[in-house]
Amino acid sequence: MRSVWGVVALAIAGCATSDQSAYLRWKEGPPSGRLDGKVAVKLVPNLRPAQHGDTDLSDIGRERTAQGQMVGIRLQGDANPRLDYTVGKMTMAALRTAGLGITQPEDPKATAHLTIEIHDFWCDGMLAAKASVGLELVLIDPASGQERLRVPVNATGAAAQCREAFRIALGDVFRGLASAFAEPEVHEAALGPPTTAPPGGEQPQPQ
Image (cartoon, rainbow, N blue to C red):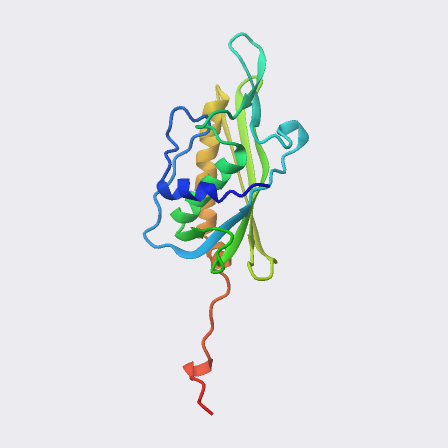
């Protein structure tokens, strides 16, 4: 699986999600004035079921044309990167909105590694369009590799066409991600265990 670190630069640069040429769009919140910790996005595994995209990271749905023909919805072109990059970019932006810093997986000072599991990302446009997105955040201790916390984030959107249904769903997903990262339990899991000082602040005495 290729690294998603390349999307960090896009997230930091504030790559516009309002680009009209992009099929998947959402509205992001501004970064927090203070960023704590360093969270590294390690993996974005695609765990969607066979009937909803399976392993094809460009396949995100089916929609009926004006002529009544069902066609596949695929992410194509520079404005529409594959699904794991899109999800990684959105999650990194949500981390910064919630006041958490981001870094690369190789950073030895990372306070947490983050895996973003994609369990659902699909639009069914047979009649009216319904888009559904299901992610699970897995915060991992960098030193031990043990899971600290799992957090599901799910949303749906309904509209006349899948493009608009995804816009609604992804707007809710971004808000759900930012809200989740801002929760005290999740925020603490992203920062890792606090550094403890010696009892009473005593300094070791020279021998």
